[in-house]
Amino acid sequence: MYKKTAMYQIIIISTLILLSLTGCSKMKKNTEIVIGVAWPFEANKDLFNEGIDLAVKEINSSGGIEGRKLRLLKKDDGSEVALGMTIAQSFAENKEVQAVIGHQNSFISIPTSTIYDNAGLVMLSPASTAPELTKKGYKNIFRNIPSDDEIAKQLAIYLSEQGYERMVIYYSDDSYGNGLANAFEDYAKSQGISIVDRFNYYTSIEDLKRLYKRWQAFGADGIFIASNLSLGGQFIFDAGQGAINLPFFGGNSLDSLRLSEIGGNAAEGTIIGSIFNPYAEGSEIDRFVKSFVKEYKQMPTSYSALGYDSVKLLSAAIAKSDLDDPSTVAEELRNLGKWQGVIGTHEFDENGDDIGDLVVLKKMKNGIFQYVER
Image (cartoon, rainbow, N blue to C red):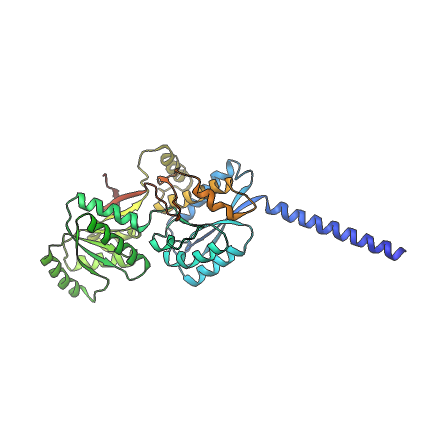
């Protein structure tokens, strides 16, 4: 009898301990909201990290999300596909993660999108512009930056308004370069602009000089660059060395002061399609810029604003979702409708594309970008 009583006591105590531990675990889980962030933090000192941190600080100082503190779980993907896939899988398996911000590179976002969508986990990219990203029919994949299609469209309209008629396209043979080049060619033609040459390779400056003679024969009046910053900047430098006297235009990948460092004097006058004008009128923009400068003692970059808006957008959607079911975040993100951020008015369509009016044009002058009035 004593042995049975002792056994029952042990069972009851063990059960109470187990329930207590479970309760503590559940309480700990429910005290915060976790958003995963995948980004090449170490390699890119673009103030993106400062932008997302500022958003978290503001949210938590205002009571968090439904009374829960927001925490970012940051992982550096090193701009590597394999590492990005590993990080995506770790986020998908982490039951605390409510949504993910990332990745920067389209060549990582595109393959990882399958992992996130299969897990029912929202991935919101502040930088991947390749059209392919949102053409798979996935309901959990979003971007809060205009796609290459929209950037190319706005540049083509501007060039047409400025009287350009015959353009050359230089592009990199990857998902970003091909996507942007194709989009620009289509929209340029719709605006009455002819593409007189399109190429992705040259062997030397002398080779560029020979190409320039052909472009002159065709009456080319500008060169559109669809490539990453390193390749695009090097092409501009080489074109300058070859005395190629044509203006350059490009997409958001060239939106960096390093363009002047890489391209040299030839980069002067380059016009790009990008996002975020910190000098634009608007209370939300003004408040953000002042807060950022106060916190970090420098002006925010486009990536700062994109990161900031990413955190705020997801937080707004998560607050309306079932906090115990991350798969409900996607629907609430779409249900936000027209949502005012610091880079403009965001609005997501069924594909997860941001169709808000977000594109701005910038022109490099004296080594810095100035905003083009339209």
